[in-house]
Length: 365
Image 1 (cartoon, helix red, strand yellow):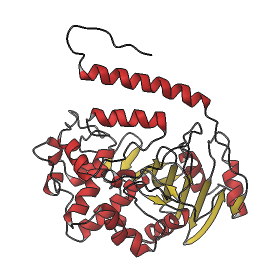
Image 2 (spheres, helix red, strand yellow; image 1 turned 90 degrees about the horizontal axis):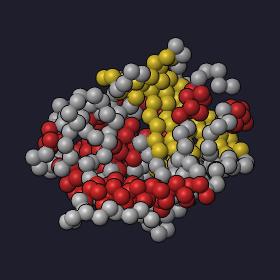
Image 3 (cartoon, helix red, strand yellow; image 1 turned 135 degrees about the vertical axis):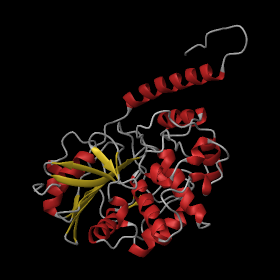
């Protein structure tokens, strides 16, 4: 047990919080050491050649149930291990890519502009966050931190690491806005990846038309494209049919349902549905498809459109986004020039980016 140093007068709250966080982190380390490393499920489904390419790329990847989809010139091929194209996974921050499509579509409809301030559509009081432009937030250039400056969220995250619980449980839209209103902006203009920015952009779009983020996504993207298995649950359910995921070390994780933060990472989907999305993006029929077009530098190797990332190498240009929750990992990527796309979904919180990038390359098989 870590003792709090004795001092004259009350111990500052920040010191108490720091000690609690350190104690929880120590407990996380002990429990993680007891977990079992995930093992790839037996039983390959779908296309044999694609499944073999996946297996060849797996050494070093921590995976259990895994599903992939390859889109080429409108034709879709699926493969999986312990899963198939209908298996539902949490897609984490791939949700941000969907939020980018919603933003571009709202601009096309004349409902918002990229120069609109968040405070024009959300009640953010007089805080600095209210003055951030939608377009800047969508390019991670609004000087917004990754999460609100709220010690309770830090404590939630640490507790979730210890217990496998959902760190976003109970954070509804009013709670998000209240935390955001108290959050200062960074003092330097360097782009910073922000879950807070994505959450606020999505909630601003929903507020603009008087609906929820989940309903807006269903009405404007997933519904029109026929992505019927894609959902955005706002609260936990006792009868939730989705199988839980696991941490990188194999510890079971509670499903991550989100309300306030839903536009940043709350969507669940399947490889079948996301393959439909990629096919529509490749042929230009998806709502708000220009969200993929890069508008600004994110860092030395990446450019960013409306949440969508673009990386150029000698092998070509990849437009992509990844995601991770407590128990799941995801990757969607497109080579728009070659008209090729890839989806990788896993029920282990260990990056699948390398696998997705390899499958996207023409020499994958």
